[in-house]
Picture (cartoon, helix red, strand yellow):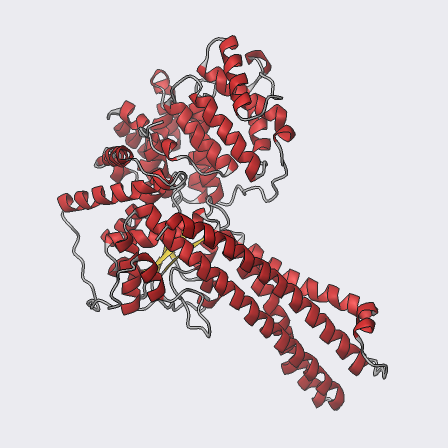
Length: 630
């Protein structure tokens, strides 16, 4: 299988199906309007003039009915969209999911958390929150509108029955849905279908209540007429729902093939996801939640029994991954009893998963893999084994780890006093971290931050706000903000604000060309160059060379005296609103900028991570991990 060709073909086919879905919605509105207008003329006005298409199109009743139908569909869609806009956790909680807390996780749950964390670090994105559904079936899903509010849900059966390589195949599949924007598409389809079904629900209400009451009160003819109206709307609504669901299922099936191909691309281990699919054939994947059908197109495998499938046949998916499969389903034990492996065995297993998970970092953008990149990721992640990894699973330990990254020795007494005033126990944790190899820990910032963030998302809102205040006090202790401090604060605050609902991704990206943010880009690129060159002339020459490289010669260099931190903050707020094509050019320019002096410092690498989150672009594999080759 050529996985990159399979991805491209699936993307093209999916957009064709989305257009069909929109046409189906438009057709439903047209037919509903025609029916209601006919009903009004025939049963309300008792007009004997034949109801022709020309009369229909010119009738004010038609225009009014069209508006009402559109309002009904629009309001139903808006209601569901607002509900889903709360983020992926709303979907997970609706399905009965429980958020996994690393501090209280069992051995099997800890294994799942490790797999997700490692895949997220290797991929260069924030670790999605994980929700466990207490179903014995094998299934999973990804939900959310953006990478920032994404969650991964998985069933108890998947955690208990799947081996680690199979579990990673499933998680890689769900990460594919995150990267390929499937989550957002799924949320929009679910919201639109809810608007369509409202027409059918209104028809059903009219039949059951208004029509019956009309007959009871002696207005038999009127009651019968309302029953006709209700029946018509009911049929139209559910036929529309059927057609919409049919197209939705087709979209979902295409995306599943794409996600399977991408999962193999990420892991380079087809047997993992193929093994998971074979176990679903042996066991099953149906969910017990009453809301399961609403999100039928979200799941790894068919989640509900339906007249038509929302997913490709399991055997067809397996054959695409493993063409040499003999078609036989292995025999598995009904209840798989697992023992927690010894430390040595667990470490060996983690090393293997580090290596396979690292592939995501190398191929996500470029589609190629260098052998030394895998070894590098293995070494870096292995360095976090031991006490610090355990501490990052605890709320106080995660907070202390983040504060350690801001720590400046010359302000020791003031910083300790700040922490003590907030929480004396946190001071003990911080002192413990500071007694270790702090230089090495700071070199591993890109590994520590995502692990700590997952734990910090389990804080209460009040605890988070207290921690955020303390973090800002640490950053401000010397009355100035470095590139490192700004980047670190931005990454941590953005992720936690998204989780706690205190920040939203901009819904409207308004800048379509570089000229629209000319002044802001001048501030950004000038400051980047000044961070690398002490001499203004050297900084200016490097600035002009980068602008020439990205075709932005109209941008002018600004001297140090003409730039302030406040100007930088304001520039960042506007740059966040650029559209994807513009964002890609800006990101290309930033990459060229940090490389202009022939090397990329850890501070610059952290800034690349922050900017990637700001403008929602994927990280090049060379920038995802601390010691990656650049």
